[in-house]
Length: 134
Image 1: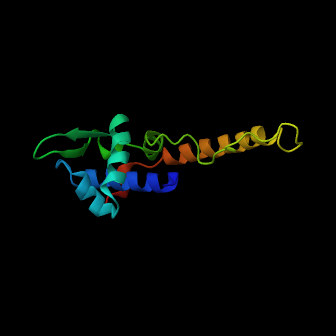
Image 2: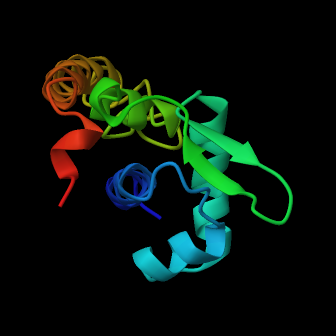
């Protein structure tokens, strides 16, 4: 699953929890709304719980709920909760340091990618989960 789809699904989950508040929603119900496997939803929910954006309630009426108001959750927080550190990644294997391109490409790419990440987070910080309410 790409970082883009993880973010989209996480925003969908949080918006659904906001709309259905104060009801606790099961991962199966959320999976039906997203139209994906409940395992995918539970993995994303684990990250959102760990980040303090979502809480869990056990038992017969158990499920997931927003831990904070939708007005206070920025998309930047959601992105970071998914443990995505960058939009783009560098080479999996280190480039050849004896190559004229290989010895400098990673530092040059890192500069560009860091600027992209800063711009992205700044933009995501301007939007809140409540902006997606139907």
